[in-house]
Image 1 (cartoon, rainbow, N blue to C red):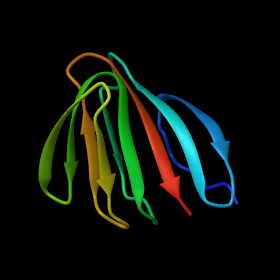
Image 2: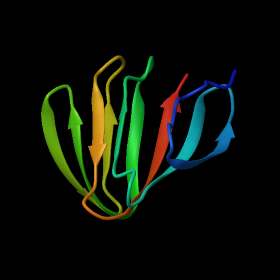
Image 3: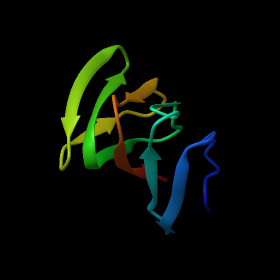
Image 4: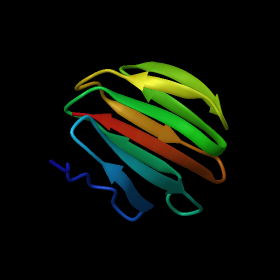
Length: 93
C-alpha cells in the first residue's frame, strides 16, 4: 500500500514502493528550504546532495551528502537547509 505524504510545494518524486518500504526523493530549494513531517512508521533520511539540519524529537543533527539519520515512528521531524539539498526518504511499512 502506498502512503500519501503532504510535500507541500516541494519538488518530490516517489521512486518506488513495495510491501516493506516506500522511497521518495525530496528537493529543498530556494523558497522551500524546510520540510516538516511526523511519519506513522520508522523512516530513514539520507542526504543525497548538499547539507541540511535535521531536528528529530527535539535533537539537532547536522547532515551532509551521504549522511543518514533514523526517524523513529511518530517523532516530530524537521529538515532545514540554507541553500539547496536533495533528500531520500525511506518510509518503512
